Image (tube, helix red, strand yellow):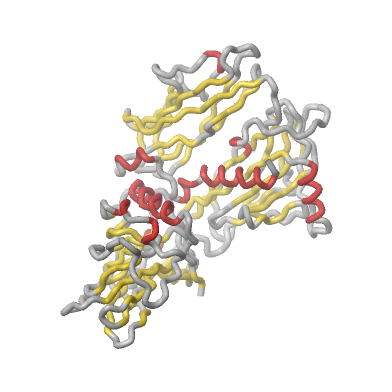
Length: 528
């Protein structure tokens, strides 16, 4: 596998690990009890362990629902006992493979570690399964298993040490102590370090051996130094990884940051050095923490890529953002199709917070009388809020949503074979952060029908805890009969919106939106 492909795999793995922070992941089981706490297990599917050697395994517990009390983690079960050959040791403080985790707030993440030290070579079964389960208040929550693969061959095994969460306000920054350990039995000839902060926090890596990678959305730094088996490297204080929170960043929010390491082949190191030759700035260094003398064999595949990455969050406190509704006018003659763009405008001063486990910004769109919906935006579903979605929403085909969220050409008709005429209320989700003086709009198309009276609809936005000004949370959505058709409109302010309900419902709706959006471009947030 090429180094860049491995970097991409690590990026996808770590992004998946942080999806609960951005509100786009929800186990199917959680949909059954939206009001309840749901503590999910997010860990590696497979762990490779060298026979006779100890291996520390790290995974996370995520509370994807309401606040959870009396959370218990259990390893193994009566039906699926842990094989003694695996040399399993539960985390400190656990009794008989049962761990009392305590309470978890909605959206809280808790890291857990256990160790394996399988028997020496000659075991009859080279693989085993380790069952894990969680319960909340004595009620079963999540369950999964990790496949343990045993080997006598050995290899390199990079691990990124745990990283502590930070609390920073807009304009503040802090250094991040990064340490990388090779717990395997073979050396790594050269190292690559990947740092990603996809939602707003900015990594500062102004070093000659680091370069931005637009495809990965982060930075890649290359170190042409050997990390011996059993050795550790760390970034020294003189050349740290630094993260900063730009002014205008929204809060309250926990912004994920990912740090990953990988062993590199000579060719990638050569190509990188050629690309960055003559780059300005000092070089990002590594200092040896512990080392074991060994020859320099060819780089071996990493035995366990899941622990090559570590996740931490940067908590930004509450900031203010005034969300105003953007309405519109369906304009045209009877029988015409008209498209409007409605949604939210952020009057600032800070950006709005992105979606999270517990909250997501949305707009409730009430269609005016006298129109028949023919197309809806890919981020909109029938309903009035994320906790009040039409039960038939899952039956809407993928092609109902607009192809790119940019509107339809004049005169465009309805989706073939799809009848949307019964839909009068829509909930449209604002997943991304909207910058100050930016807009997030949704395109809706409708046919103007013959009706005796036209009753105005509305667009009502929920600005959440950041929005203390309610007078502009509502705008009109009307119909204007003309001889020639057309579209457009300006917002009219009105009454405030309510708060979003249970976090589980938010995640469920966002999952549907993500599924329908998977093969499409995202809506563009406009900054004026």
